[in-house]
Length: 114
Image (tube, rainbow, N blue to C red; front, side):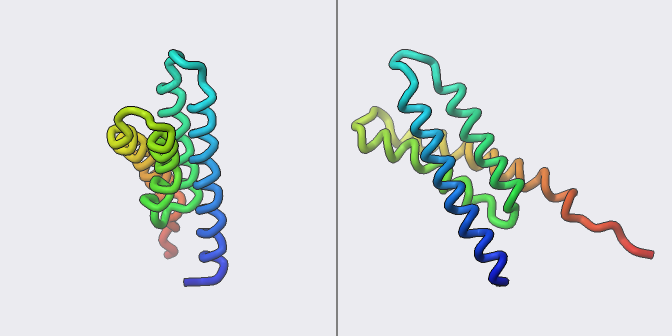
């Protein structure tokens, strides 16, 4: 693997973890009883899609780094049903990451030269 590619993947991993932590912080800061789950789902999907678009080679990597923080913080805070939250957050971030990677696929194709 090229050095530039490794540095780009490392930077994307830091950004992915940061976005996941940011989404978690926004979700935690929402007032109790507020229906913030819709905005959390949109943010998880958008973060995954952004990273999948930027680095489409291994989108599953970005979905893990984005989606793991919300259920981890819920488990640490003694929240209910952390396994369900894990499945939902990973599913949403995975859908976003693969959607971003698929959106990038036509951009990577080069026209055939004659």
